[in-house]
Image (cartoon, rainbow, N blue to C red; front, top):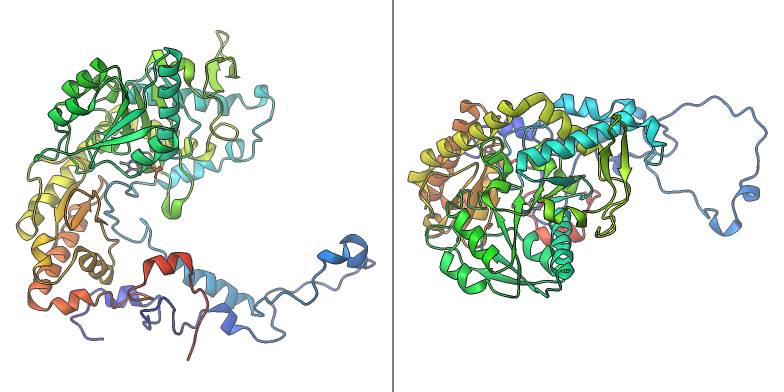
Length: 510
Ligand SMILES: *Cc1c(COP(=O)(O)O)cnc(C)c1O
């Protein structure tokens, strides 16, 4: 491999053996544990058994007994450790490097939040313990319900939903129950064409029909299209604000009026809350229901579809429909679960939600405080605008105006050179960066969606920007260098569908 490939090559490649292939297999790696196996090697040493042996047959029914020993690798302890350590190093995470994935970004995950979630008083309690013995945990839930209501401008909050999409569905089920309680049959949910895929999916699962409206040339909701779509059958409009282009819907008050006049409700997809926390509140913009993605906005590492929390806040008139139980506080200061909600849509999650994630969010809010949350949003927006301005001369900028916490570029100009947005993303891997979100939102051709987040230094931002500019120059001078990337990763280009559906996890040496 020559120097042109990557100047970070030594850093990236020392955890791999640089022999990636294009079919998804790793050709050789000294840490592959089955290949290291040698008859008779053990990773443990135990004293001889000094109790009378009970024959396994007397404890386990014959048909469940193994006919031959399990095919496990036979290796030394150090080999096991090296194997798992090598695998863990192949993971890319926020603790390895810059991670500017737009929209679903991994943001700040303070280690102290991890410590707090592991306190025995939080981690070792049982969900069905008597309420008198878990007053601290209940106080945390109660306070978090109220904090999230205050941050979003809502009246009451449920902490049960386990993800943003789950929150969307919960919110829509409440909207449905509300319309039905008034004897109204409203079957349609309006979404803009820039909406996240979960919006129409949740609407469908909640039994609604989705109506997609096109964005205007400015990337914002087209009010005439909205007026034309809103009517007697409108149950709700689902909106992200700022939207997935990173643009604030400036006409939100008019949008809310159009939907409310038609008798529909406004649903706020809060995945982008880190752009407005402490500055603006969906409740004040006219939204009736809000979900937050705590695992995006308020810490918790969430790669690989890991655990999340999607609390939902509602205005008072929707509170009777909230999932039960909610945590309430009696006049004497004791906390309890309130199941007395006859109009509730019911329970939407086992127990009370993903408690560990809620602890992290609580810790996040408490350690920042109101001013700190506002600073988070201000810096997220500042970083995004800095990056947009520096990258704008090198890419197509479909919406060239001040953005919020993220922005989109288009790789249309590179397409003419035979280099696609996918190639740029693959090339970034050679320099040790997690690529941005690509090909989303769907209404931007060759879309590259970048969210730098608030925690990165100017040097880190500049390093990424300079690398993007370098890749543009490579595309102009030597496009194959980009279209054949990556070079330094354990595997090269994969058939991503096959890699997910039929992963090849063992060594196919030779
Ligand atoms: C991530 C995201 C969602 C879905 O949230 P999950 O927690 O992944 O289910 C919805 N809308 C937007 C804009 C998002 O970024």
